[in-house]
Image 1 (cartoon, rainbow, N blue to C red):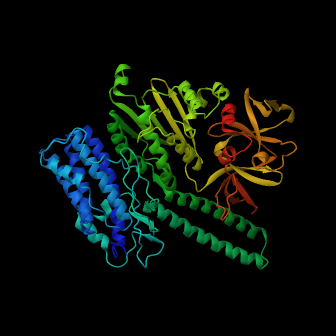
Image 2 (cartoon, one colour):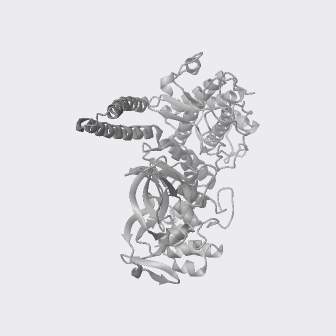
Length: 622
């Protein structure tokens, strides 16, 4: 039975508000460490913890209340100048906030959190008593960077609640008003710009996993299933729905007239106008609905300053994470799936990219290294960049390491240019670290990054200048709900390929195809590109002579996809295929004529093509 039976809705409200408050506190703690004399910042942090403690008290979450009370007292002494903030005291505070976040995870499963470890409580009491923590805060468990916010929906939904609820709906006792009165805030103060929360009931989740080591991240067992929507966007959807209803009534009347034999020019013109109006309204409604799924990427970015701070401190480095473009909006489902890649990239920048204090001093660089995480919109895509001012990446070192680990052969290593060499970091099992630690060295991080980005129909690139730093660039579509595609034809069968991979369409003259090392190639504007037939990728019988070629750019290679013809460009909604997953098929959609069109997963087709090894792909890359 749930520990919070009858209070599920209140618990959900608490987790939503308190989760945001704690993320804000984490970021402000990082800022406070840079400006320890900022009293306004300290007061803001104090108020945030006080609100969390008040909500936890109303839920009778005693372990959380006890930990928050001690930490709140520490903040109070700091703001009253009874204590001076030091890095060691900040380590204790960060360890405490990490445990608070762990307790949120228990609450999200409708379980009463376990009491905090005695070492944490003793360390807080020692600081409150004026004792100086050890330099490394050895008595305190290492802080865990909060890269992932806990799920905010309780595991047990109210018995009478529907699958989806709107937080603004009234029903039964107004727990929210009472809750906000007790914690000293107003409902509208919790999220002024996003007053509506839409939630789905969550399935029961397994017990909490043990806390991860320092510098690592613990991924929750379920994605956050709430979304905050500005009421103006919902109003727009409602207005458009009403206009579509009026147009539907007009079409119904015209249908009745046509059935009754009224098919004159006036009726047909009215029908044409009504259909055009409906087309425009549906398009507007589609855009409006998509905007309800869009969220500022800053909600994701705000998790990383704490991650960078904790990791840099554990490595003995001075690193500042600068955030830019936090207001850039992206599909919420993509925000969730972006977390793991960005965690790896931020960790990689701090660990591998940023040089040591000794190296920076020898190179004449500032003692503090700057890692920048930025986002901006370019057309219908989002571009995210992770930039560091560290040591840079030496292509020859990457080639040597990949060769030593048997990931490529000597012939391939000698044929790789600088860009291809830099992309070796994305190979499974690749690592430049000779010693495995709890931070890095296992060769799995960057492979995970690339795999997850490809799942989002995106691409990742890397540029580096030795001695100056590196830039990892992620390019993603704005949303996964609607995919721009190019409809191509193999015989009479249409297929859809992602438009993001398409560079251009060319005609193929069979006489222009040349054999190089037994493989078909085509020269396009002095660029020698391999030719792949769509038939061979799908294991279909080869066409006699493909008439067209699509110049495509994958994450690692450029190539010409030979096809029989193409139909045109379209924006499609992908529907998954139930109970079956053919190789290289992402899903299906319907054409304008109503026929089924398979949407191809080109990256999967390329990676699983038995006729091409990974080394060959690198050798062919432009």
